[in-house]
Length: 506
Image (cartoon, rainbow, N blue to C red; front, side):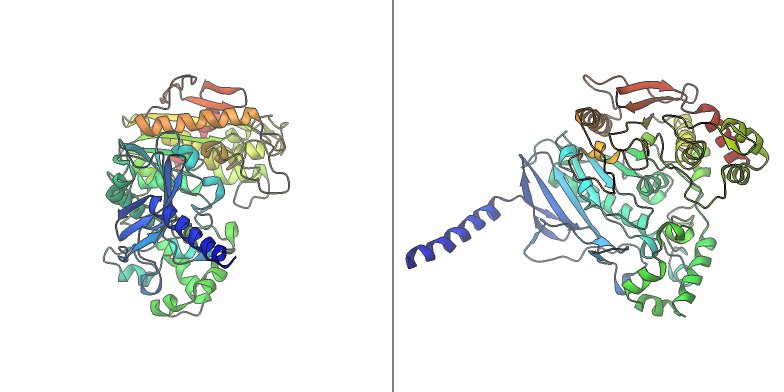
């Protein structure tokens, strides 16, 4: 019996050693990392791509990774960047890599995922963003964290004065650029092609990568872009961001930059982490004069953005009402459209303050206006400007509504498990969707379209319905419905024409 008890631990140790020996290992910037095997491929989690932005590195551009000795285990995700909730840390600049084959053979296209969450929440480690299903389509999938909220988008006059670039804010964007640079320098060792990188994101992640097309710091780091529900925007100025930053410092009784950097991360988060009610210059990108030298809207209108293939779209019913407070539909439209308000009220069929019956796809007039003004029509405008500049562009609308979600419709973020092939991940909320074989089919087609685009700049492929290119005249788009992909033209043309006219007017 004693002999048996001695043998069992020895066998366990031997088995662990054998697994470790067979686990995929690679050298990256900083040292060696060891990941886990997956169905012929591999996954590496929690690889640092920058130094921890803590202490004196808080509110600075990402610093190089400090080298480590030995082999770093890359089998667990890194901490989520500071936000409300558990499992968060300022030490959060980590990325993850999924490969379709190990050891690597021929170089594969690379897709780098930037998560959404309003630039104040979210993480690359969310179960819905598991990269294995997409990687199985023949791409190397990378996902990265970036600083959020007051840690990622804080501007202050002293920070601007301290900077050699005379800028502050946009630290979250700098992290995304640092992740792209890490991909360029390291991804070949994972079987990826550094010359064929597609950056893709949703919501604030999509907004961020769209504005990166106007940043000289990101030039040449990606060839293609896929944006879901987050078109290019007109961010606030550095001065506006600094003004809000000064008020935050005052609320914390921090009279110097040294004092601000000494404030514990949890206290900073408590002081500024109110979520959507706190959206504004602090929690978003800024035209800082360095990362973003000019207003992205103006850059796109002038056709001066980075040349890149673009696949951009939105969901049929992103919102039931706008993010910003509004007393009513008529009042909200009047505030947004000014002298064009009477035409806008006609577009949304509002008479005497009363709106028409809800549309079965697009919802109420309030939902239509909210989705048009904050997602859909900005997407159309960006595609018009981008294609006019000689770039290849494609547009999509996601309108599939699974069982259990009929009231909400195709809402903001509902396309994500379809894109990632993670429909089996338990849904959130009181009424999670009930996916069926139709949803599985839609998901399979979307994964093929997305990865085909990443490979060649063309989403079309064998057995898929033909997706026409976008052009300013026809405005062709692919409607991703429960009945399959349907090619259409002129998505809400009248509403979006008025939106663009209003943008130019302003």
